[in-house]
Length: 305
Image (cartoon, rainbow, N blue to C red):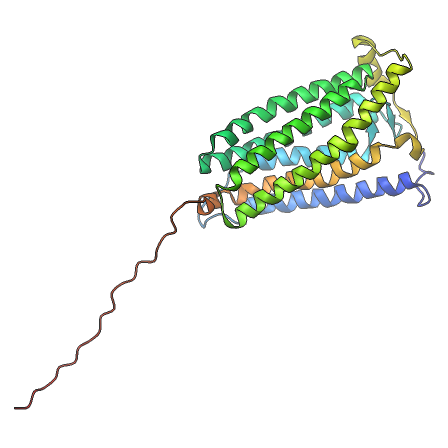
């Protein structure tokens, strides 16, 4: 395995080092979160959390999957990677990504459903049910892209991811006026973050794949069929350390393996605090302190006639 490209003068080496450092930090945060779950930190005294909380398990799958993809990055349709190993094959990488990304969107569905249940928000609850099928369709489009090498699949995949998060933003806006205090602030921050994500997808990510698809059509490129494509994703990978070949992938991978993973960790941390949600529901009457009447002692007075 050649490592002579790992020099600071190579931007690709700097980028890969960044991915490794971020992934190591993410794994450390996951272990810290697991320890807090085991201690029941943040929960009422005497309350016990499930030994394997779904939010934590889903987060672990996403964090570990992203760490694996950070160590062995690859671009699916181009079949390029950094290391010459079968673990760099698109079939392995795409399989790991599919499991991780489904876990991520299920996290969102669980959290949205919890917020909607407490606030009695039917619209947000319905959106929580809808986003998982939308992302499942996106994963199918991704597999179509990697098997056929047709960027149209990537256009559809990323468009569906964008649509899913537009739905999540709508749900958050519906929930915004139903909560107060720090919870309302957290919902607003999440909505702003999603707005940034949607802007990135609409202006950079989806147009990039659309331009590549149009270029392939203009060049009359032939796409792979099902069986040829399945063989290709499992057997062919091209090792390259030329940063030009990775142009367009660096930006989204950097954000994906950092900010997206931090979001998953925050969603998992919600499991430690979800019992507090009813306190912050808007319109909930604030309990009044019952004041006991003050008893003033009356001293006996002796009357002198």
